[in-house]
Image 1 (cartoon, rainbow, N blue to C red):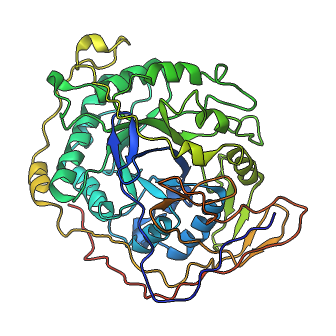
Image 2: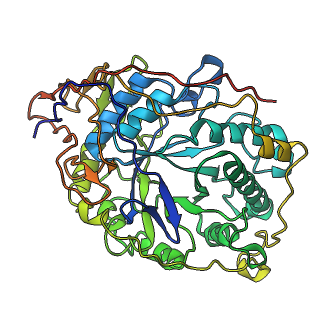
Length: 479
């Protein structure tokens, strides 16, 4: 089957339709226009790994519009509807990339931290890293991404708790950062944007981590330090596994009464290799969709750890890997029109009250006294970072892919382009058919490239004349 995309008629310059911002309602992400619960079909997106975040040279994963078009077109063909981006620079202009992924029908989950010193909590001594300049940087990320309608949410931390030792000291500080971010969003954004935590799937501390972040202090369900969502990086399904063998069944049992949405922020065990992705049918099947809101495959770009779906080279060229096609084939077995058209249940689960008895593991923190904002932080929460980064959707003049893309068989893919979706559509798998949030089955997306040896592939180029209007304001400066 050839890679195909609809030919968009040339016409007046118009901004691509925006996806509908999602809201948290109980255990679900909900599209308020359609009333449907949303399942994340996600991809971890960090071009260049940690080296792809390079503030000294003005580079991060969402700073190059041509690279974003290249990857958005290929992920659109795959069926991705959400990207998770780990390390970002609030100084940079992300308008073009955000607009490209929006046009492709994809949401963004944004981590507010980075690996650089002073830009994340120190798990060994969190009290030393929780200070105003650090928070100032996280708030700047919020400012840079709050106005994009396809910003699904922010992670206040990623695997900061990975054993009982870190569980003894870190949890109150993660809740404090969550509170500070939520208060900043409340004061400076025009909509609620969920803030949550991405946990390591370490069974000794997973349940206590989840309970610590979702519980209500003094029974106050509106407590701003409560996480709005909870995710886990899980690699327990390896090879030809099963719901029971992988331990997915115990995760469903654990989270079935969660008061917030739960999803996989990373999954995709690569042992044995090549991967078979047989967990896809279960993650989006009846055993899990009532509890889990989908998941994020790790990861798009190949790195030394061998989890990539595509070899992304320094010169901008890309070679698709076999795992890309295997994942597409597994997605194609799922009826995503049915999955994404389930009406929100309206079920609300009250969180447990924060009590010492809620924590089961000896040594894990059971004190729910959350640190006050450090000196100077409350002023930033009240008044905003200065100068403020900003972002907005912009017109894209050309959605075509400029870089050479090669399939796993060595054949070049020609005329690749992002297919802008319309009418509040989200991207969806099953041959790349666009699926509107109201359950439309219009054939609007790109079909995936085929494996060798079926020959070279081509697609009609999409061109929409428009003016690219950059909107990024003055650069942001850390304390």
